Length: 300
Length: 267
Image 1 (cartoon, rainbow over the protein chains, first blue to last red):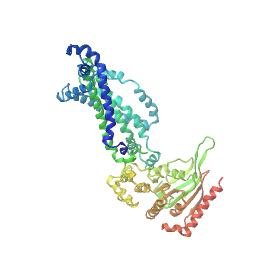
Image 2: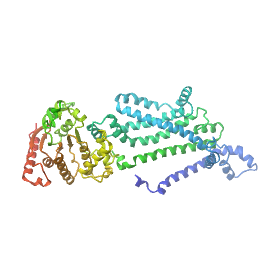
Image 3: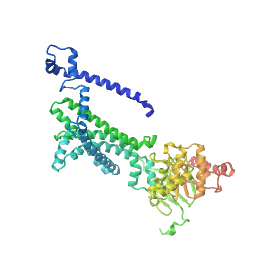
Image 4: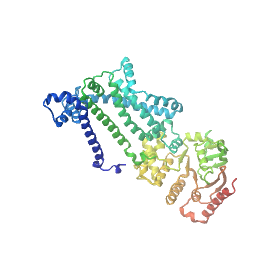
């Protein structure tokens, strides 16, 4: 695989081309979408005696509360939030990202453990396989937006607030991909490998730890990458209905309350960066753990 | 089951009127039909025959990987199930079945680890057995870094490491080239010389069976049964040169005749 990917410049070029295309479309979109507002609210004040096309374009890319802020406005807003405010200030997006990341990670760890436990139960018991799997699949057809307020209210009445309810909803989204992948992974050992353990009179527990678990790791990690990205979504959704003061979800919500479109977009960008960062961290752990398996890791 | 029953005089394996029948829609398949076989302690027994003759099934029955439909199988006086729980078997499969996430050393340590042996002791035993199959220096390698013949040697070291009473081998060298196979046959022969462990060996190679065995069990298919048991007249000490002697050729001829007879004169 690595040999086919080529060198860094070769790999980066297609990504950069797409990025350039997106930025171009974005700037064009900003002109189109902000034009009406600029003509109505900005240009009559700044250029009462008529304006050129250049003035119009420049105004659409710099206006306050645009319909679609230009990329450099978003980047500048994000940057100023990071450098102009202390880390514990609600004006700093890293502060919100940390709040969301905290809930995401707690939910992710619990969700991954729950997913592995469910998968272990399912592969060891035919009854549980038939009884649990349909419910697990059904659980994911309920929209998380519908579940989130219910969970928040119930946990709130029970005295759980802060991280716990958010983590619970992140966990709800995290466990599913892990369960599905681990059911497959724990069943991945070949018959000959299972029989080998059988001739050693290995206990179920030993067969699980020495054969099933290591066989399942190549299945586990891709599902963890999916899970942690889903966990970010879960944590942010949980921040919406609480009127929470902190977290990227809350930041998005206040942005839309006050029509602060640039703020919404920079919070969006921050959450994308958070998702990327967490996924990359899982991928890094994956490389560390599976590093020494060589080709055999993926080959069955 | 007092201790007298477990003396060395007791057969390692005794099979009495054992049958294995697989139910099928039209007619049930007789994988094994009325097998009678006694294997003494320290014997090297080869099961040979064309595919479908039940040689692998018989091996799997003895190792408790498959149940018998009728009859009786005893291993050191125990049922195969009890013998397996007592960890009497070392089983070498057709494929090496090494775990790709474990080093060569850790693969050989696996059965010792399952037995709950202390780590240091398990490691020492594993190193010693890797040395016996000529793999000293490869302990830290991963299975995919080794050739097919070396992988199979690791799996033999793994099967011997926990000192099983009986070594079961299911065409262990079937997938290897002839030169590697000769080499491993020679090593296996020397190993048996040294340790005199009971070996039950499945093969479809006449030369291999004659070279290694003290007794050769010729089997025939449909239904799977024993056609003939040939006692080896070869000396216990053997080298590969032996294969060019008239004695060796006479034995090989006898086995080939048996196989041909089973094939032509079958039901």
